[in-house]
Length: 313
Ligand code: HEC
Ligand code: HEC
Image (cartoon, rainbow, N blue to C red; front, side, top):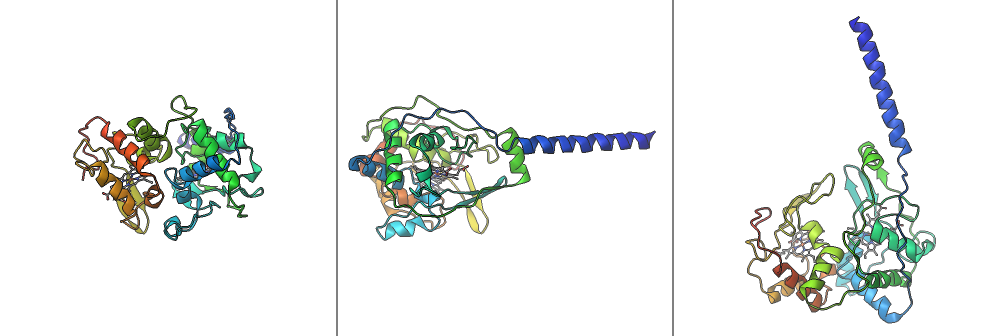
């Protein structure tokens, strides 16, 4: 009797495992619907220059899309090619950052403006599958998105075939059941006035420079925010280097920049990277204008005071 029961339990479990494996396999290339934003790139030199300023400054594309040390290239007064770069090693797999030079075979030259705009705004690749949400540009204005794509089109084509992502078994399960494209969290502005106000600072800190993404505690499995915005506490654990914890950057609470003046804040950014293994893209941010940095500071100043302890040091 017991033996029979065991046999049947075994068969049931085996069939279940098989069934799950089949479902997981069949859901690896799920396609998602998202609109193509109405964005048209241009060769207008002022717009291309604006796009370049965003890309190599607050949006720090080079920190991920360049494989070498972007900092050292910037230090030489040059601009790194965005020909594919870092490998993000995560428990769900290794992700290879793509080649986004204008190359028509291995870069963005093979995509339409709408396809590039859609992956940045809605997280849906040209082939309809979802990207993992590494990039924070969902709410970037139409005007800035146009400028960034115009800049990408203007780049020298570099042929570099980036390997496909390699996803672990756990990653395949996450991909099958949990991965959904992330889109805008609010009405995307057509254009946003570039000045030093908190309104513009809010835009930079949340939708372009991703200060919020690193300076807010998150659940490492899902990426969901679990801490108070800008109160820090996110752990950066990487084999081979000491663990860093992002500090609290709300200036109204006793965190890292409590008591800093606007000048202190700008001066700190002008120094660039001081901790060599820091994850913060200091050398891209160092290129931001005084106006942009003032805007971010004014925005941080406008945050409510908090009692959050995380990252307070
Ligand atoms: C934090 C790292 C990071 C930053 C910063 C970043 N990217 Fe990416 N980008 C990625 C990763 C990772 C992928 C691959 C995503 C995937 O395929 O799931 C990617 C993919 C892309 C793609 C899709 C390319 C393709 O062939 O599928 C485009 C276009 C792109 N990035 C443009 C940009 C631009 C423009 C910027 C700056 C404005 C930027 N990225 C900044 C990490 C980053
Ligand atoms: C990729 C993650 C990441 C991003 C994006 C990021 N930071 Fe950081 N930040 C860190 C880490 C990690 C540290 C601690 C190590 C260090 O000081 O470099 C840090 C430190 C800081 C410090 C303290 C510096 C000091 O010397 O005490 C300030 C101020 C700061 N960040 C502000 C910002 C602002 C403003 C933005 C957006 C413009 C931003 N960070 C974006 C990860 C990030």
